[in-house]
Length: 265
Image (cartoon, rainbow, N blue to C red; front, side, top):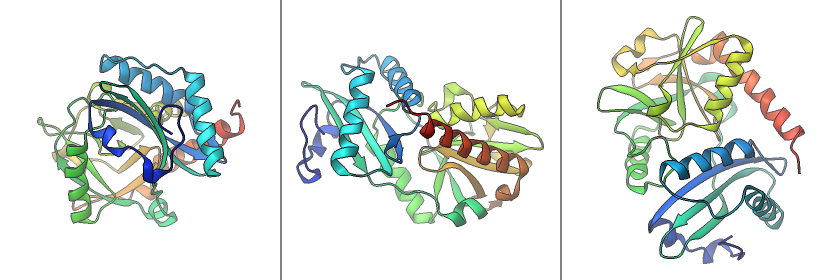
């Protein structure tokens, strides 16, 4: 969908995304319902504020357009991306994108990751940056890993290239401070779940040279949900067997079920 016009993917104006400024969200669809839609729209509004941009479509209209695309495609499981593009003429784009969900083996045994020394221009806002994305994707493919964890100029691990990252030490969980990362919807829900379960979750700068000190690591995001990490470079973790990680995984899956069951059409 471009603005109010339905188009086939072949006719989709992909060049628009590369011109002007764009903010976006990716939402997971389960059973024909957009997961955590309210939270995603709040984050979209925050991205717009941080980039000094205004949204010209209401929350209710975004919701209607999402359901229209779901119904037209008869696609009830997948990921939808919607973009506000600011140029000489503003454009709203909404479409299904290719998705890669972790396998059962990934959840049971964890995934390999690498460190990538680089940082986003504005980590707090979900702004399209194709050059940065391409550099990270090349390294991920070259190393044959699931994700790259970003290290800033001060040597701190901030987040994954498509995820947030958490470190477990005994009964405590640590993650980078909010000002250093994209405030992911899944990240926000993890904070809520930890508070409910009385698990101590601390925002703290994580020096990449100290990763050996942690018992477990997991990443979070729209597609991976809560995903244990088995390696960061050559450092091994038994994250998929860690009690704290398993509790978070179970609790998050229950929260997904609640959100889908209670979704207000």
